[in-house]
Amino acid sequence: MPELTNLDVAAIAQRYAAAWTSHDPAAILALHAEGSAFEAHGRSGEVRGHDALLAEFSGIFERYPGFDAAIHRLLLGDRHWTLDWTLTFQPPGQDRRGFRAVDIVEIDDDGLVTRKDTFFDYAQVKAAMEIAA
Image 1: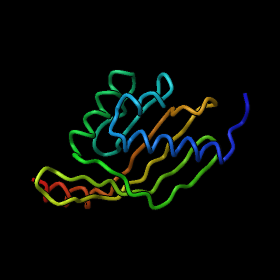
Image 2: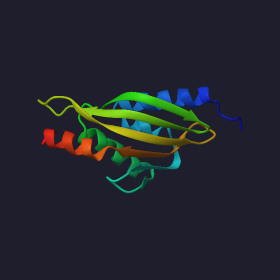
Image 3: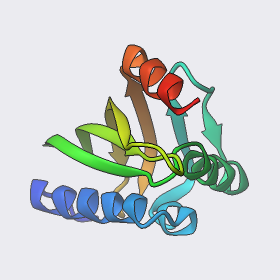
Image 4: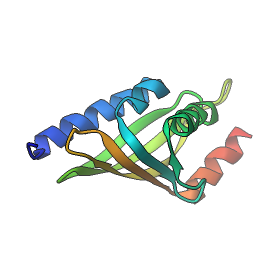
C-alpha cells in the first residue's frame, strides 16, 4: 500500500473537519475504519462500534447546539494529526460560547480514522456549560 504523505493527511483532516461542521454523524462515521475508537477524555470512556459511534456523535450535536470549530493549529504527522481548536456552540436564545480542545487522530493506510482522542480544557467547559444552564 502506498505511504500517505503530509499533503494526503492534510486533505483527510480537512474532509474530517468538514464532516464535523456539517453536523452529519453518518458523514463522520463514513470516514472511520471498521472497529475505530473515539474517546472524549474525562467525559466518557472509549466508544467502539458503528452503532455506539453513531450515537456518540449524534449526542455531541445535541449537547452542543450550533456546534462549530475554530481551528488554531493543525500539526501533521505520518498517519496522524493533532488539532488544537475551540469548540463553539450556541444554545437557543443564548450567546455563543466555547472552550479549547485538542484532538489526536490516527488513520490507517486507506486514510480512515482508526482512533480519535479529544482532550478538553475542563475549566472552560464548566464555565461554558454554567452560562448555558
